[in-house]
Length: 291
Ligand code: ADP
Ligand code: ZN
Image (cartoon, rainbow, N blue to C red; front, side):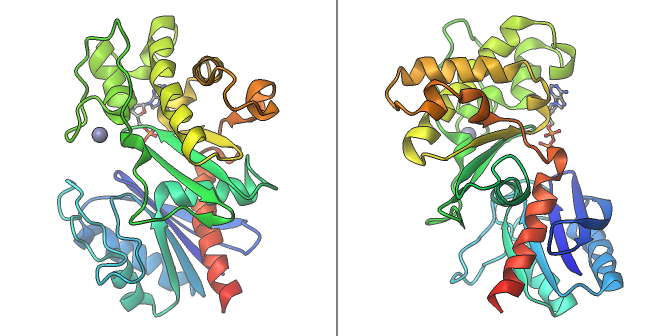
């Protein structure tokens, strides 16, 4: 039995499952403070006697294995979680091998092994929810450099009719500041799901997301782009994003995936909300394979 954690800012999903990606049991635990949340998380895995554990965590996190603070959540504003030694806490409680990465990198891995990017060796997973974040698998490996990339904060050109200042506390009008769920709510005065039939809302949303996708295509060149998160439940965004990506690239990347079959290139997650937890299970599986 393998263990998996998808640790989010509002809830932890903990699951046990098998090497083929089947989830056998799962629980949801509220993200309160580490003192309240972690004992519940730990007791779930102790009960199931897992052999290895994969963790995909909200961030920013330290994923550098050579760093003294490897496995810590770093600078989050979430009370109690800044500098929390997440990995170390789990290792000391369970005494099993554990792999640790970002929520979005792990979601990319889940979609690659069991979802919309099966059979490929690279993909990018973008989530548009309370924030915007992206992870990627490149040539079979989770994307990592100096740290994990923070693709949700790339700069975007402002829409000529947009007067919203942006809500990113660091950059104001970066992608997250202009296109995450709270940006939609602050700009239009209603939550995304209440704006479903207002075409201009989604045209503007696609305007920002397409710019980011263009940057990702030009820098990482992923073989597929998967867009998930609460905001992307508005399925009408997909055709708008695809069209704007093609217009922005303007034929510069002359590959059929982009010029002809973009419907299969920019896609929703095949695993729905299970991309992260499935990817975390696959991280645990990788530990056993290495051993
Ligand atoms: P989180 O990012 O916290 O994990 P979600 O991915 O569900 O959670 O994102 C929450 C954000 O997405 C909120 O700003 C919410 O308004 C927005 N959202 C959730 N569902 C929808 C929907 N069906 N249509 C549009 N926006 C939505
Ligand atoms: Zn930002």
